[in-house]
Length: 285
View (tube, rainbow, N blue to C red):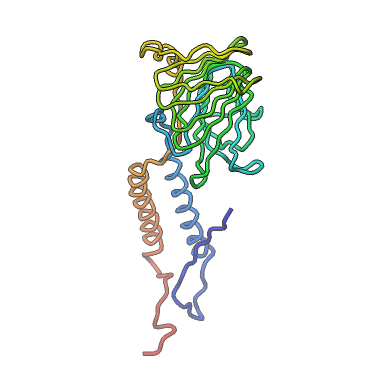
């Protein structure tokens, strides 16, 4: 943490002047008071607000997962445990590598994200200067929804793999099958045990992959898509942001408080015998 110090410039003190303990402490008190007020201002200006538009994606794309699932995430352009994005948590049972998360957290490469009952997670990925390749693996059960944006995504489930870019999709995985719905764009899906068996899924289509077979793709209606993604409505994600209006209002109040403190101290030292500094004591006429 950087050390913050205050520098005070005072008039030269004459030989007969004996600064009191209180006068030397007052500048320090003023500094501490100001720092405390600034700290309170920043805290007061921070507020938790909902993520405004969950369908808007950064260049790295995003992923949302329903309750009771735990995929792992790799950013192929990142090394080791480098940060790959930010995670938003909804509900009381969101874990990153076994550690609970409330509201938001940075997510590192090769992390697995677990969601328990009535909980969901959203990850917004970094694009790393237009070099972006995301792998979602060990996705064995549950619902996922994502927008790949400009990133290349590879999703691996218990039965299938899917490769795509610039696509919005929904995926549901159960013990028996993987069901992929494309809302926009297209994606290539393959059987996990036999990648030669593959199919292209276009916008408005759905495909089902089991351990050894491919069903579809087939067209899906808007109503079917709405039913598949309805689970997203059960969750709200929050983020912290600074309200500069609150900060400016608070700054005005703080300035008034500091001015009142300074006026009170200057008033307290006047009257009776002056304890102030007389410049004529040190400078010749």
